[in-house]
Length: 310
Ligand code: CP
Image (tube, rainbow, N blue to C red; front, top):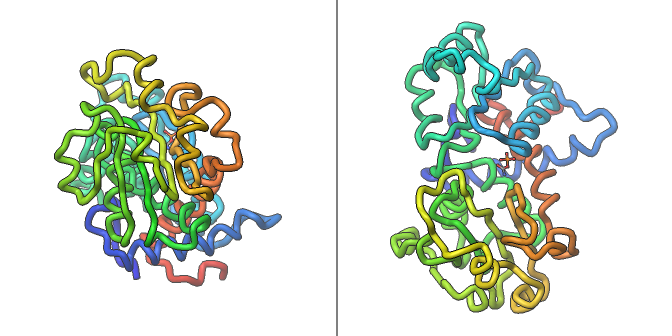
């Protein structure tokens, strides 16, 4: 069962807690298929989306998740707030806290910012991505998508490809998948996957052709230019040559392999242009599952049980 007040990361969650969130999310999937897409579970609660970094999928799916649970939702965007007049992160949050919200959903470029918020706020906090640290709800929606397509999270080979070093999605996925008896393989340019990653219990294979061989899941990542401070590969042309998922490379994976990507996609760079639209791609399923997972997380940290309809 899930007894936590906050969701700051996947690290530290037990397999039982992850399974419970995923089971709850699976039951939330059905709500979004109804003609009236609403349950009263969080009626009277207020959720504040605090986004200090750009977002399309995460911000909008948290907004829909809160609304489908009947919560009141306020969207805060750093660029249109009094931050631009010099107000600090802490003072901004303290002022919003004075308006009695129940849950802050926070995205920020600094690792640890979600945790920092819990040190002076009384509200529940959900990490929607903090620097290169964690993006827990992304890993949960990825896990839900894998479970729906593969039936389980054990006994799989999952290959994660690209800019692992700067990816909070990769870190959260590694923490989550490590709770299951599944093989995790990282692939990408060596400067973007330092050998220390093997301490996390994963295999590193810099040759993408070998890494993809027999994979059940191929998870492609974007090059995180906004977090890179140096030059990690000679050119985009080189990157495409060695690390783009092409149809030929994908043919080396298991015949029922699925292709995942957290978005945003850079078509023609990490993915050959039409792979995202192929029958192997579950990228838009990931997006749909984002609503169910975020509904489950908001519901569970508010003290919910499985009965959310009444
Ligand atoms: N996957 C993800 O976090 O996408 P956004 O940056 O659009 O929220």
